[in-house]
Image (spheres, rainbow, N blue to C red):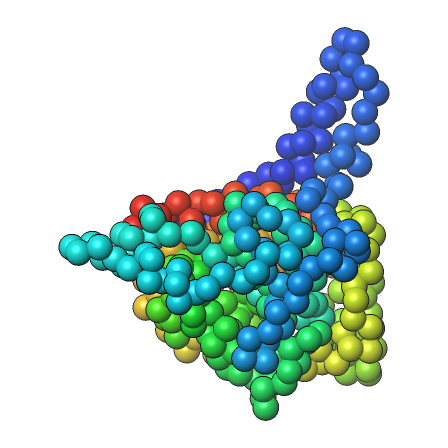
Length: 333
């Protein structure tokens, strides 16, 4: 099912404007308020985060209700033993008794800190922010294919019970690849701006990559009118432009399975939701809709007036969708 929604920003701008027009109302700047990312962390926050490693993957971990990233990673074995299904109850139904862990999968040219910048929006959940192989603190695993990346994610989540995967852009495509494999610990997923076919990126941007240039004005200038403001307020990305260029060139040629991958998604048996921006020109919303139509019972929320960087621009909207999938998980789907 596909739903069109006005963006949260548009709704807030309208409400703020109405308040400003009310008699005696104080002067406001509703557009600025609507554009300001909520829950954004500062560089000082990053400097205090504990960084962990598992099977060569570096990651940050946040316990539910904790924002500093300094909490110790839970003892998964003890956690699983304490929540074994009672007699006569299925593992799926028992999810209502467990804490759902969100695992965020980042996109191209990014790393754990880009999505973790808005991690406070999701503080009702345990949260994991891994770096993909070869990105930031993670080691290469000997391959750079979509299958290699999906396998790395499967390895990473193999001992985390009750996982809700959230992937953006390339991360969304990889989440779809993980769902094809149907790992036992995955209970649901949210795919944001993801597709199994990235051949519809702006031709000028692809041409720049072929000439060893990363034209960020093309990358971010084609993802919606308000995204540039968000990037200006989340601070610089820790990766250098040279590293980002290498990532974009490598990822632009990844094969995500095409029609065969879509066919495999018809066997997915966990709740899945997709979120797209209608003004997304990096991954047109129709490409995400292909995934939604392939997965039984999947919901697709299309945000009007929003581009590609939905997690940074409107994290509350993503949290709303995540909460809906989490509720379906707790109800036993």
